[in-house]
Image 1 (tube, one colour):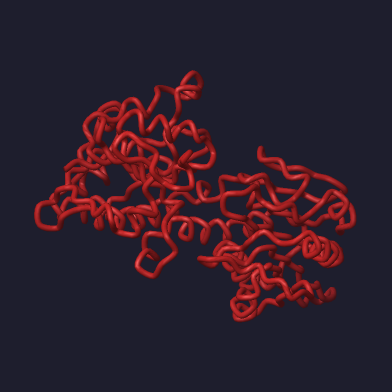
Image 2 (cartoon, helix red, strand yellow):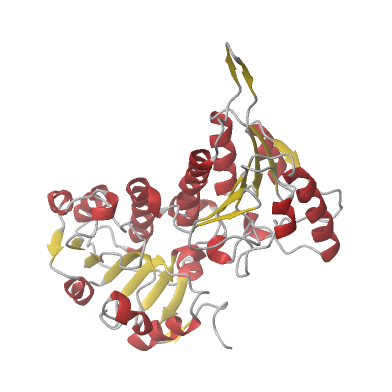
Length: 384
């Protein structure tokens, strides 16, 4: 069996869906690896490193797609509509019957799922990984969000014109920065931990009451809306809240923002646009020099004034809307993602023969599977 690792071609994407360590372990299982020349450049992994680990370096994407039984990627393939600016159609280049595994963003382009099906591709989306204990080592959303939460705080510190920790000097004392984290999932908890390590006074908000213990265990203050309504949904996700709750939440966030120096927003609702937590009016009442990092910008953003293209300054407040935080730490995020993929592939490969042996009834496989045998099969995306 052959596993292919093509170079990512989407603008701003520096990660690679593999590592030398992943290659070594797959080769030891009897799998052949095809890696496109230059695939690891953005993540500081050379062709020589892949080759030394046992991979064959393919001259171009066509050789990878045409010669692979399984293709692993970071982001979804380029569509025909995107080829004029970016290069060839990556879907039609794949063999019929091949498997495609990656963070395919299935909700972003429903027609692309039909394209996978028409091409005969068995597509698996890493974002749909079931939240069960057995799948934790395959959870790419968590591995990538973890480092993104760290980077959000580092970016905020770089743009903030004061220091994070309290500092005593001969000329007087400097007060610590106050950091508010909105959303205490994986990214939010890492943001809290990083801000605390830098010496800031940190508070956090989440609609999920279950988040309180995790926030407080990191030394941050948990702020909450006084309500009997809970935002806890299945799988540890947040659910959509009532209009009354949202009104109270807005009032609480507005008052809290007035006292903050740094705000990190991470709030997401699966399958829906990101909730707007910070309005333009709230930004206007923040302290000049404050910084907001909107980590949800790829899903519409938590701040009304966020710009997915980068930086906005409004009312003296710097708003960083970055959807490429994992890519900005490509060496480490690629290494973690490769481990996630290795665990997925190990589940699909027969250990003795090295052949593809997918258990189509395994709950992890069922949860990830988008298309099979020429059909869109995931219930969230079928028309049935």
